[in-house]
Amino acid sequence: ILNVEQSPQSLHVQEGDSTNFTCSFPSSNFYALHWYRWETAKSPEALFVMTLNGDEKKKGRISATLNTKEGYSYLYIKGSQPEDSATYLCAPSSGTYKYIFGTGTRLKVLA
Amino acid sequence: SQTIHQWPATLVQPVGSPLSLECTVEGTSNPNLYWYRQAAGRGLQLLFYSVGIGQISSEVPQNLSASRPQDRQFILSSKKLLLSDSGFYLCAWITGGAGDTQYFGPGTRLTVL
Image 1: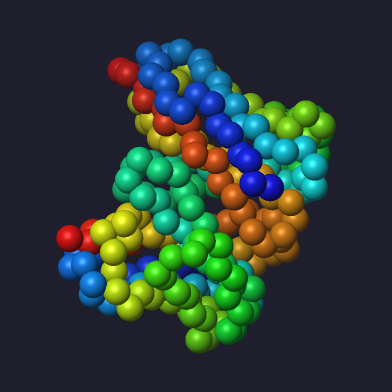
Image 2: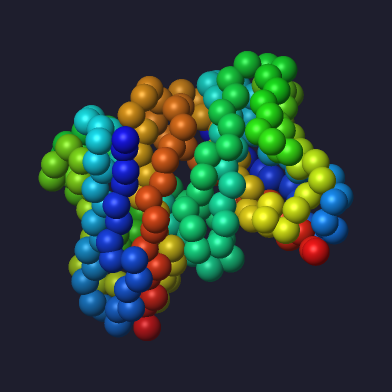
């Protein structure tokens, strides 16, 4: 899996707004899709791992969906808070030990 | 519980000097270990990974090298640093099968002057 694209590259939203962003990846040889949250000066923190087409995962106000047939995953944040400000990374896996990360979506939530 | 350590936390080195960054994992055995780098304004780039002692896979041709002298120790080295080696270096591990969630260390901020 070489071509992992995340969009938008960055966005600013107001506190309380809901937002979503996309991770696109080749649908062939798919094994799992990982989402990570990465705050400045910290290490990435795992949010979700999804494997099945149609999977939906939820953690508090954050949720994610997966479409393996068309090769994309959406991450949603409901009622954004300033503490949600971070870079959100996706990393699809083809079942090997090699992981390729997208360039991330930088989210800034304005109070 | 499993923990991952990296040191040093920050490092400032002159161009042409050697480098050694260390990563150790506690509370697990036979981890798969990874080195990543984030250069300024860039994403997370996989540099090396290792599935066992002495086994290193290199992903990006560069003046860096990696070694795994012990099961839970992963070292990133360079004989002569370049300005372009500046960045944030992260070590990560998985204990499960390929494709499992990765867990990251606290990172090392390297500045090459």
